[in-house]
Length: 391
Length: 115
Image 1 (tube, helix red, strand yellow):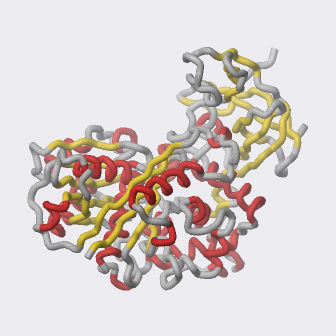
Image 2 (image 1 turned 90 degrees about the vertical axis):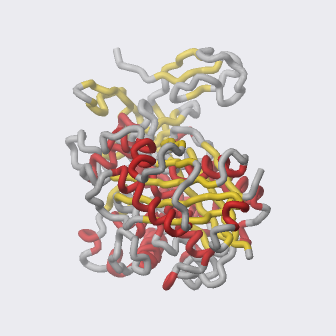
Image 3 (image 1 turned 90 degrees about the horizontal axis):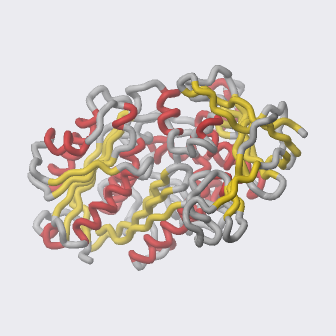
C-alpha cells in the first residue's frame, strides 16, 4: 500500500446553518481545495447520516460533486451513523493507498437543526435496535445515562468529574472560532450554584444538560493524496499513518461487561499497530465526547490511561491544554458541536491543524502525532485514526 | 393469557439470544433460523437505569425510566421501569405491555415493577 498524506483541510462554523445540506458539504470542500491549491480531484467521498431522513435529500454526493463543478469525478455518499466521517476518510485512504486514485476529497456534513431538538434526538435514536431498544423510548442519551451510572458505581467517577470534562472542552471551544458553543462555564456554576438545577437540569440521569453535546449543523473536509501528488503542493507532510475499525453488539444489554467499550479498544489498537506507534507517542487527541463520560472512557480504552483511571487524569489536568496529553483542544463534540456525519472529518481537521502547527491559541506545542476516535452508535461501530507529522 | 417476549435458543450449542439474530454468536456454527423460541422469564435483577427527561416527540409523558435487567437464567433485556426509586440490584418483575405507539401501531415490550 502507498503512503497517504493530508494535503488540504476546510471547515464551516458549527452552529445552526441556514443553507442547504449540499452546500454545507461543499463549502468546507472549497476551503480545502484552496488550502491545497488544487482545482480538481480524482474522487469524492461525502459523509452524511441523515440527509434522507432529516433533510429529504438522498444521493448527497451527486449533488455535492456537481455544486463544486467537479464532475465527472466519481463521488459517493458514506453512511456509517455518527462514525460516517472517519469511515469516509478510511474509504479515501484505501482509494489512494491502493493506487486507484492519487487525490481524493473527503467531506462530511450534517444539517440537523432543520428539525427541532426532539426530532433530531429521535433521528439519532434510530441507530438503536428497532425491536429491543428503540420501541422503549431508548435514545443515545439514555444509553449513555445507564452506562454512566454503572461507571460511577464501578470506578468512582462522579458528576464533578463529568463537569470538569464539560468545562475543559467548552473552555477549549472559546479558542476555536468555528465551535458551536462560545459560552464559558465553571464547575461551581453548573453543579454548586443555586441555579445549577435550572441551568443544568438532568437529561438522562445521572447525565445533565452540560454533559451532552449540542445538536449542530456543520461540515468539514480533508483532501488526501499520494506522496507523489503531495510533493508538488508545498504543504507540511501530515501522513494518515494508521486506521482501525471495529464493531460490537447492536444492543448494549448484550455486552458481557457493559462498562467495556470493546470496539474502541480494538479499533485503537489496530490503528496504532498499522501506524507502528503506541498510545504513549500521541501528543494530541480528539475523542468522541458526545457525552462527557465518553471522553473519560475512550481515553482509557484507546490506551492513554488504565481502565478506571481516566477521570483521575482529568482531575489532574493531564488532558487540558498545557497538560501532558491535551484531549479535544477543538472543544470536542461538546464544545465544537456534533453534526453527526461531519464529526469524524472535523476531528481529523483539528488534528491536522495541530500537527501543522496552525492551531493558534489552542496549539499543542510541538505536536507530531495525533489521534482521533469516531464513535458510532453506542460504541457499536468505531473508527480510529492516527496521524503523524513528517519532516 | 399474558403476552410473551421470546429469546432464541441455538439448536447447536443451546446458547440463548435476545434479541433475535440469524447466526449464533456463541458457536457461529448454525445455519440461519436454527433457533427455538423460548419465552423470556419475567423476574430478574436491575443492572442499571436512567430517568430520561428529553423524550422522543411521540411520547406523551414528561419523563420515562429505562433500565437493563438481567433476567433469571442470565438473558438481559432493556425495558421500561415503573418503579418510584430504582436501585441497582433490586428485584423486578416484568409484564408485556404497550410501550410505544408508532404511527398508531401499538408496540409491545417489557415493563418492570418492583418484585
